[in-house]
Structures are given as structure tokens and as C-alpha cells.
Length: 378
Image 1 (cartoon, rainbow, N blue to C red):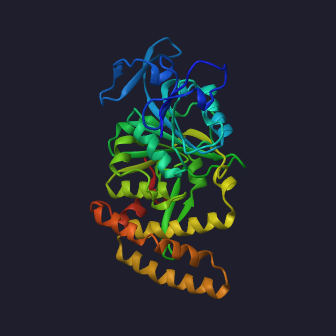
Image 2 (cartoon, rainbow, N blue to C red; image 1 turned 90 degrees about the vertical axis):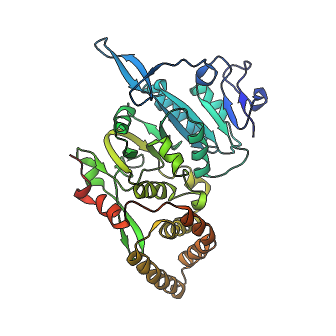
Image 3 (tube, helix red, strand yellow; image 1 turned 90 degrees about the horizontal axis):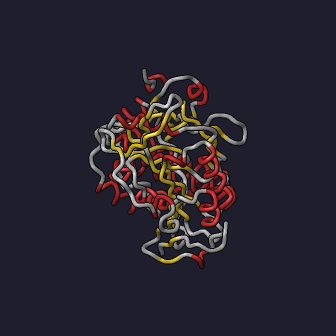
């Protein structure tokens, strides 16, 4: 790993050969330019100790705006990072945030596109591809602010979105907040407000589209890793995204569920809006059969890792046996292979459960409090 500064040289281009090692795997703009090279001042602080930015509103009155960090993990898709950063810049959100881009071992032009679009950005590069969870964890550990917004590189801001998210963190119980996320393919909402229930031995998720179109905030089952604001201190206390689920899927569900077990909450904020090109990165790298197998494996691992309710676990065992036999008889090996893949990680699951603190909220309380109208906030 290396830490590099961008040097003066070729206008508009920033080849790796023009960067100098400094320390670890952190890349920052040239000294004296941007957040990393700028001498930090104490600045204004809110009552919570969080950094605030002073800006002039439309009436010329000075108002305090809370700052945050925005972490964007990426691998090779430099054009997606550029588009994401440009959308943040176009709507003024990059001006009030520390931008941290985590390059997960790309061989493409991530640095060039990042700094061409956002010269103040901090770039952290992994020597090799470690996966989504590790990239997010690296970015979170590097972030400077208590509130961190995680964005996939295929997410685009369509307007200002930070203020509605950040306002919720005045409540110390809040772990994370989801914005309203629209699918780029058809413009429909999806992924912001999520319900869940144990069904046939696994946790079945439901995107609450109709509810998400109503005004009003609500509890949601989990914070979507594609776009969410999260308390950095709580995230780190939970150990971040669990690499048990590598290379992708279920890390965000697992993290949020463990947050609920600690007594924290996850909210949905419909006034904050983003667009997501779902699967633009994963779908380009893996075939459908592999994606389906990983998804099925991680749904199984989630139950083993988190569920404590004995009735749920008994139902899980019975259904897994039935589904395994049924799939074999039909000649469909996707689920049997997923179950065998999960079994190879059972030792890792056991070690995590042994070190977990006792939950303060039960499985039934978590699923009950985040389902339907029980989750509506006044």
C-alpha cells in the first residue's frame, strides 16, 4: 500500500507515476490543495462537538450547516465515480463534505477522473481487490466526521439531499438513515424503505414502494449500503461491514440488524432523494448464476449469524432440509451449492456469535417494530 500526493505536472491528467508515497494506502491532493493539504482550523462546533459550517442563506443570515464525510467505494468503473462526483458538485453537496474515494485495487483511471472532477477529494487505494465490505470499512476508518454518507459509485444526486439525512443524528439512538432511492432504470422508488419477515426459514425482504411515496418518516429494517448516512462511531463499534458476506450482498442488512440488537434504530427519510443504477457494478463483473448463488448463501449466513429466536431457528433447519432435497430432485443445484458454501463458513459464524454482546432487542421485536404501520413516525 502507498500514500500519494498529486503533483503539479500534466494539466488535467494525474498518472500514478506522478504521485509520491507518503504513508499506508492514502492518496491525497497536492499539499496546499484541498481538504487533505489544507491546514485545518478549529472551526465552529455544535453542541454535540460535531463540525459545523457557516453559510449565508437567501436572506443573508448566517446559518450553521453540519459537515459530514462522503465515502465512495469503487473498482475500475472510473466513469461512474466521475458521474457521481459531478452530481455532488452540481448540487453543491461536495462543498460541505469531505469526499473520500476508496479505490479497491482498480487498474483503470480512477485517480485521474476523481481529481479532475473533485480536486479536494481524498483517494485511498487498496493494493488488490478486497471487496465492497472492506472498501467501505477502509473509507469509514479514514473519514474525519462523525456522520458519514456511504454512496455506491453508481448513485447520482438529483438535488441537495444531505440536510434531511443529517438532521436525524441529533437523536443518539439513530444508527443510520436511508434516503428515498429511485431506480435509474424505471424511475420507481426502491431500497429506501424496507420491511422484513421470517418466511420459509429465511428473512424475506419487501420493498415498501407505496409506503415510501407517502409523506412522513419511518423505521426501516436496514440501511441500504448503496446510499445511507451512518454514525461513524456506532459503525466502528459494530466492527463495520462483515467480510463474512464477501464479495457482496447482505453486509448492510447484517450491520443494521446488529445495530437494532444494540437498541439503535434505522430511519427512512423521504425528503432526501437519490438515483441508483442498481447492479451497474456487480452485474458487469459476474454472471447471473454466480450472483444468485452468493445471494442465496448470504441469506442463509444472515440467519446463522444473527437470529437467536429458537422458533425461527427450528423453522430454518426444517426448511433448509426440505429446500435442499427438493432442489436436488429437480436438478437445480443453485441452492444446494449455496448451502454448501455457507457451511464452509460455519466456523467463522461461530466465532462471531461467541464474541457478540447479548442483544437488548429480540428478533421478534426488531421485525415487529419495522413492519408496516407500526414503523410509522409521528
